[in-house]
Amino acid sequence: MADTPLPDARTLAAAILDAWGSNNLPVLRRRLASAAEDALNVVHDSWESERLELVGAIAGTIRVLLESGEPSAVAHYLPLLRHVAAPPARILDYAFSC
Image (cartoon, rainbow, N blue to C red; front, side):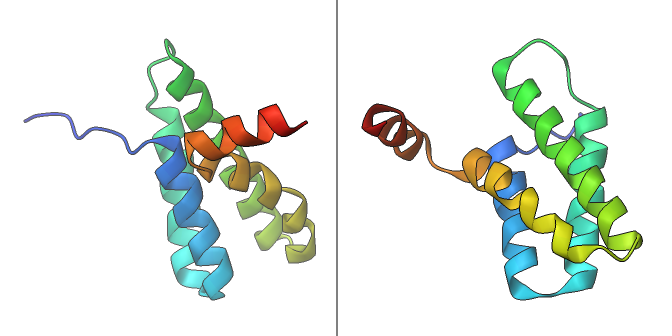
């Protein structure tokens, strides 16, 4: 059986942001769980693996915040997810505008 390739960090971050924006808690919980699980299966040898680990760590933190009844604290992590979800050209545009 062939290994299923992991989604890229940008796709995972965007999926979490979409679920957060839709206020669909069951979908958000599934996407957070998926991102956290994907981060555990990363091969630690590339830039993308570091980005996947970051998204996985953020997903795990958001899960804990939601379970502990602190959804307002999630707002602190949304900019990080937006950064990872941004298209590469947009990141470069931002870097050169500073």
